[in-house]
Amino acid sequence: MTIDAAQQQVDNWIKTVGVRYFNELTNLGILMEEVGELSRLMVRTYGEQSFKESDKGKDIADEMADILWVLICLANQTGVNLTEAFKKNMEKKNNRDFLRHQHNKKIQ
Image (cartoon, rainbow, N blue to C red):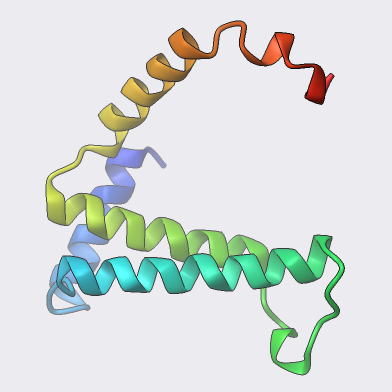
């Protein structure tokens, strides 16, 4: 699936099943909640914290998909074409960071 197709699919779902988009600030809050849920699971999976009963059955991929869903909602609401935005962002990173990381002694 392309990013454009994902944006269309989310928009269609919102308009047919979800009734309407939550407002942008509500979706921003939901995005932060979803990032927190991913953080909690990552810390327990790869960090030093132990799992609690309430963490069981949670899936990193599903948490990432929740984040992507809300990000797509925000993009749709604000008129952002994520495909174009990502292309521009990659160009920026390629131009700005072309040699930056190769000379970083901290990661070699």
